[in-house]
Length: 353
Image (cartoon, rainbow, N blue to C red):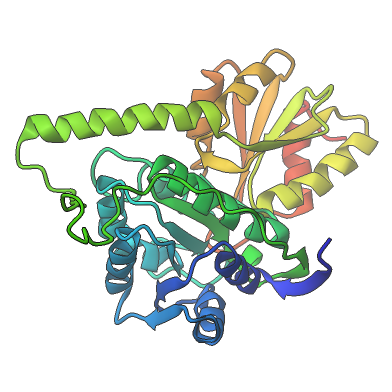
């Protein structure tokens, strides 16, 4: 087993991408994700890979499209305003059915906002991140170790289903340092007969394209793509349950909010409150079934977020509004405290403990 090393989240993520076979990185500096680009700038030349600081976020995502169309693993990273600039290119990736990994180390918004951590890009990530009918695979780490593990998973799922994947991190995850195990994982091989690798005079040319001027052709590709999405929703939801065995109150939280929530749950349990947590690891596909099933014993849900309550809609959809969903949140770069979460648990439980 590989030894644990102390690494910052952004740097661990970058090293994991290289270990996962990504030798093509295109990006542009923006706080709080700049360490990803800085690490790639140092490491890529040493392994014969490509690091390119593009002239803009728009240029970077279009470079990713170029490499992805050849079947090679490519990645870009940015933070909230920069991801907005990449939105058109993300839609092109989806429209061309190209696998790629996009990393969003979120900061406060809207607009230029601030440089402190946030989760307010939830809608942007889970509702498509661009124009047209499409989804991204969205994975949300809550530790530096998961910053590593979900990079491997993100690349694998992107290639398996021929669609872009996003690591939806935040400034806390990117900047914190924790012990992490960097262990190579087996890279699965998927059919890439669609890739632009040159015909060598042996086959017809492949075409990677998202433009269909005949509406019936575009409709056909959209329906086919959504059949793939159905398989993703059925087979790929990931989540973690914490102290849910007898829980009557269920916290739903991801990323740094889930870490704060665990502390609050342990304190509330000591006071006799039956509370647990379901932590979505994939935000799309959202773990709908486990939340719906939890309604059989859970009386109330609490969404703990670093946003104005963007995940509440998915909890309500998943539970079909069978239970009330309360909101515990901070925004603008603020993080809920353990006491904030405890106060909301006590409110859900009918009063102060």
